[in-house]
Image 1 (cartoon, rainbow, N blue to C red):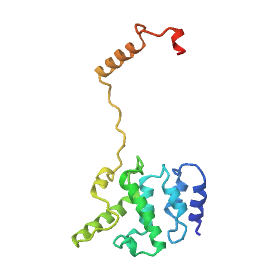
Image 2: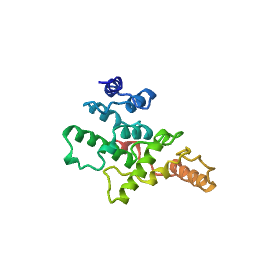
Image 3: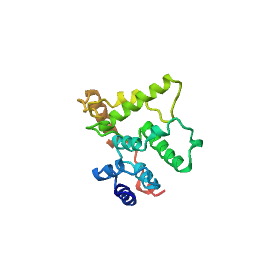
Image 4: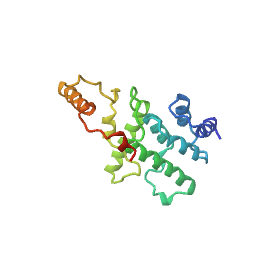
Length: 185
């Protein structure tokens, strides 16, 4: 077991978020050739793992070796690895991992771009792999980082007036209030 694997195993027992730099580095350096994938599975499935780290972990699992092989044709050790890669891919595709607001895809962007180019080459040969990413993912996360939450604009005057009107109606005393004797019922 490598030092990174030990770190991931130790971190998986704690309840802290995986957003620290040490945890990210341990995930990236995890030894996929070891037989213990459960600590990695627990760490990568937690909230707080950013998209760049998840992509690094995915590509460190060498998905290219298994992308065009049916899962039934794999031995059990590689089947477990493919199951973990399937899990990471599904989370990436559905948006479970959020990008860093400053870096976006960061250093994982070139790896993802290369994967998409390889996919396109496979499609021209009439093959489709197990793990598919598309250009839309690259378009959503441009090379230069943009804030995910836009800056709030000035409040529209009608919204403010409408809020005050509704709030005033809510706190006005012209509503019928039950007598104290009826509140117990």
